[in-house]
Amino acid sequence: MQLVNSNKLYSIKLTTICSILFIIFIALFSYSASLNGKFIWDDNNLIRYNSDVKEFSRIPSVFKVSLAGNLGKIYKSYRPLQILSYMLDYRLWDFNAFGYHLTNCLLHIGVGLLIYWLTRIIFDDWILSFITASFYVVLPIHTEAIAYISGRADPLAAIFILFSLISFIKYDKQPKAVLFLLTLLGYVFALLSRESAIILPLLIVLYCLFFSKLRRWKLFIGIALISVGYMILRLTVLRFSAPSKDFYVYTTIFQRLPGVFIAIANYIKLLIIPLDLHMEYGKKLFSYLNPLFWLGLIMSILLLFYAWTHRMKNKIVSFSIVWFYICLLPNLNLYPINAYMAEHWLYLASIGFAIVVGYYLSYWWRKDAFRTIAFALTLLLICGYAFLTFQQNEYWINTTFFCKRTLKYSPDNYKLYSLLANTYIRDKKYDDAIEACQKSIEIKPSFPYSYFNLGLVYMDLGVYDRAIEYFQISISKNPEFINAYNNIAVCYFEKGDIDSAIEVCKKITEMNPRYARAYYNLTMFYSIKGEKKEADKYERKLEELGHTMGEFAFEVNVE
Figure 1 (tube, rainbow, N blue to C red):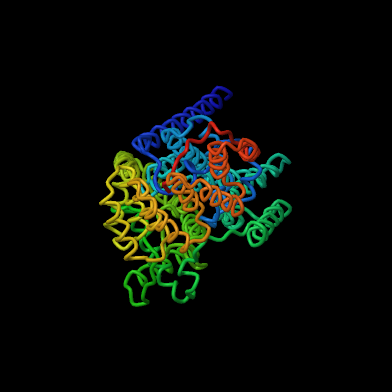
Figure 2: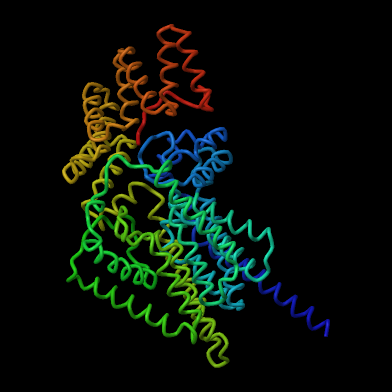
């Protein structure tokens, strides 16, 4: 009898090890091409031009500011753990994008393994768990969250959400102080990774409704108190505002509602048929007469009706459907956000889809007559999706390719034209850059970066008065555009007007005392003027921020 138990234990360990190794292998294959990617779009602001990532001494300040850090009010998001992860990457890789992409891949693998663990705990079915996790890590819809370095907030938050949920479930079965603490810490870390982690209490309630009674009230009250405390902080001392409000802020929920169900219809389609994936679906309002609105509405009603009526007969599928909708809630534009849909918003919600696929495939695995077919179909799905994901990585490797392909789907996207212009400037293709800027201005005359990029063109060409003119226009569109001020200072210096350059840099330090480049420039300017006392003063300021002169080259801001 003991021998049988030992054999069974050995078999469980073997299947677990093999499952884990396969999940790791298929995920690495799917995203191996992304390791060749460069810094794209927000990667530059969050990493390359964010001096906070260079020094661990900046850790306390990271918890006090928005995602943009020393660059000022560019983003509303508060995600300090995302910046801390970039700090670790910088220590390991400097500004080698390979390492940052590798971290994203490893985080995604971690999410896959936690999904395997979570489903094993809840459903006690290794086949279902294996298929679910394997299928999840190869879903092409996730490339925006993984192949794009700035998408890291999604896998980072998912890791802590899943870890916290697992700790709660284990505590529910066997209450231990360490599990109590791990559940709360996991939730705190999830909130510090991404705002949408606020849904964790709903996921716990969902688990309890289907698979347990909510017996651990003390732990749940602790989670609820963290939620309330977080919301109070975000509405007060940690409330950040970008310089320009999105037009969704001026719309009503009645106007946005068609987009909610159109997004749901598109999400379901992209999960099943992951073709034409891209970023920037845009800021749009839709009519109630749009067929996709009615399709999304009817699909949602039918799915939720099925989940309710089959909550006892088919708990797994019903649980997965509700999971899908709960995880979408923060990003459905019910409360105005910056788009009506985005592929990376499916990162956590798609776990529900993966569980449903795993459930039905595992069901047929157990039928002797269909086992071979079910196994072949599973392998075909996983390998097919892995290949599609591998191909989709190309989209995120090169900025020019990224912009041109995205513009096919979003031809009126002024931000993309501006980004494309910036890429042309790097490649010294100034005529193309000017044309792209003009297209961006034609679409959105109030967008400051288009004028900023025109300033960069003329700055590179040595036409400094024209460059200053465009930088000033960009500032008139966004009075807190720190990089534009910095480049004006550089232009004055190049013209030989050091006093004007110093005046601009001092203004920058008043606007943003943490902007390290201004102190570097002031040190350089006063050194050139021979005013050593003033130069030393600003060098000390730079050191107080955790930086040294050796970290900076006399460079131009290009983002």
